[in-house]
Image 1 (spheres, rainbow, N blue to C red):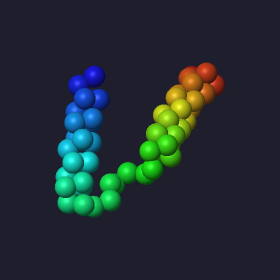
Image 2 (tube, rainbow, N blue to C red):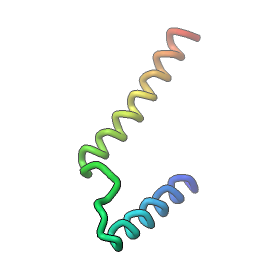
Image 3 (tube, rainbow, N blue to C red):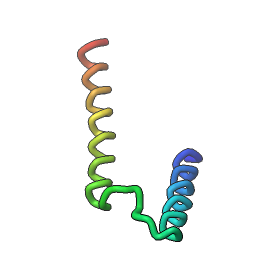
Image 4 (spheres, helix red, strand yellow):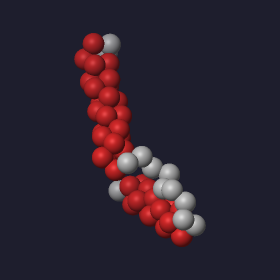
Length: 56
């Protein structure tokens, strides 16, 4: 949980700094970014399940 909170805090600080400097945010559009992260997570979990089931 602490890692998640540290990540959130770091993201907020980076977002504030970029906004103050009037730079574009270093992130993809909201929906595309969220779907990309979910896809990466699901791909990793699917591979873990496949490798445990068929290669162990």
